[in-house]
Structures are given as C-alpha cells and as structure tokens.
Image (tube, rainbow, N blue to C red; front, side, top):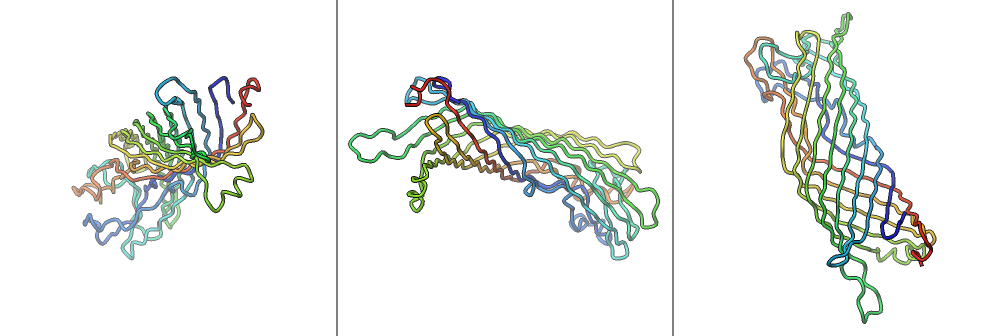
Amino acid sequence: MQVGNTTVTIGGGAALLTLPDVKFMSLTDLDNQFIPSRNTIRKFSDSEDLGDETGWNVSGSVATPINGFGNPILSLNGFHAKFDDKDNARCVTDAANGTSCKFTSLIDDPNQGNTLSSMVTGSVFTTSTQRDVENWGVAIESKWQIGGNVMGVTQMPKRRYLALGADIRGIEQDVTLRGENINPGGGTPNPVSYDEDLDTRYTGVYAAWGGDYSLPFLSELTGSLGLQSSFMLRGGIYHAETDYTGNVSAIGRANAQTLNLSRDDTAFIGGLVLETRKRLGRRAMLSLKSEYEYYSWVPEMKLNDTDVSFGSTFQGINNGTSIGDDDAFSARTTLRLTIGLGPDSLYE
C-alpha cells in the first residue's frame, strides 16, 4: 500500500536453498583401516542438500523518497525463508569382503575409539535425519534513478538506477539424527543420536544496478498485455561468522560427546532479481518477483572420521571435527499485490 509518499509491500511464495549434506555415517575399508588416505570408502548423505526440498518465504519492504542529490529512495527490505528436510540412509557391513559400517565421532580420542562400528557381516546401520533451516535477511538501501527525462527525444529511455545498501543475513540449521545398529542375529538395536546447531551470520555491504527491460521478440506481446519487466544485478562482500554445537551419544560410550566450534571468514553474495508487473487499475499492481543468489561461502561440517580401534594411537583421517566450507545457491519467488491507499489525486 502507499501512504503519502511511502510504499509498503508484503508478499509470500516459494524458496529453494542448496547446502552441503550432513554426512554422519561411513563405509570403511577393513583391509586399509590403518592407511588414512584409503580408510573411508564413502560417506553417506544422511541429509540431502535441500535442493529437492522447496520451502516457503515471506518478504517485505518500506520505501520512501528523501531529499538529496539525485532524489534518492530510501528503503528497508527483509525476507524470511524456511526449509524442512527429511532423509534416511542405510549401510550393511560385509566383513568377509573387507567393509565395515561406522557412525561418526566428534572428537579424536584414541582412548575412546569409534562411536559405533561393526565387524559382523550382515550388520545393518540406519539413520533417520531431520534438518530444519531458516534463511533470513534485513537490508537498508538507498537507490538513485539515472537517465530519466531526456529532452529532444521522441522515445523515453528505459529507467535505470544505482543502489547501495548495508545487509545482515542468517542461515540457521538444526539437525536431529537418530540411528541404530542391528546385528544379523537379532537382539536389541544399539542406538546412536546426533544433534547439531550450525548458525552463520553475514554482515556486509553491497552495490546494485538495475532498471526496466524488454525482450525484442516479446515486446509486442508483453506490451499488449500491459506487462512491465525489470531486473537488478547485486553483489556484495560480507563477514561470515559461524557457530557450531554438536552432541553425540551412543551405547558403548561412558559419556556423550559435546563439541563447540566457531569460524570467521569472508564471503561474496551476488545475484539477479527479475520482476514482472501488471497494473490492475490506478491503485493496484500485481507482480511476480524472482531472486537468484550465489553464496561463495557456507559452512560444511567436516566430521571426524573417528579413530580406528579402541586404544589405538592412530589419529584418524580427519583429525577431529572442524568447520569446513562450500558454496550454495538460493532462489526465492514471490507473488505480490500492491494496493495504493489515500486520495485519488495520488494516482491521477
């Protein structure tokens, strides 16, 4: 809605986010268990990267013109997206052929050995994982129109603008994993649990350039339908601050393992925003807005590949759990209805 010179917009829609998988269970090579580079045959994706999971998002903005050079528009923008991911994984030990299944340990302690592993052929390891992710952001932005009215021309140039902003974002992950080992002879399953909180804050600044556009081969069609399209290219540098808390408990351990880690790094976040608008009378406008973004840095937990056996001094392939890094891609699509309020003179 428009109140005086201030425009308030709120919308909702679908969202997509790719993040590194959670890999808590692995298949190991018994014939090379003391050779770090050859010990792990594969790690299972105990939780997928959310690429197949579509979430939802809400977004909003408050924009108002201010007095200053170039008649800038000052806006406060924000979004919140949520994703839920469920996945199951299964591993079968085949000791006769030299393979064993293993659940991960968080810390590298040769006096404790593996969290849980099996040397019995036919033993089945399973995991059931729930991952909840929230992705949000708040930015304050100043936008300057460039080009605009040009005298002496028969056709107005397309609208263009430059923008500068300061941005705070977050990716907050909660992982709940429950697993068990069932021996081929039956008996009580050996349970294991893993809980993870992995939160990243991005603080930075960005620049953007955008404006109206039309595709030559569709200009007549979109014009007859009354559609207007715009784009925005955006890129910024951010300080990424990550905090991790993990907890593992399993039968066979006297105490649960708890680990707290943190890491600071630098990230680039850039993307493209596309919007198509349709005016519905003088007061209302319907728009479809899509945002595509690339994160150059997101955390990926490098879980300890665990010590080989109880009492061994072998330090494992990955010496303790650490916060690694990867990249990510996000997409948000929002359908927005803007309705102007106030006297008719605002919309003449």
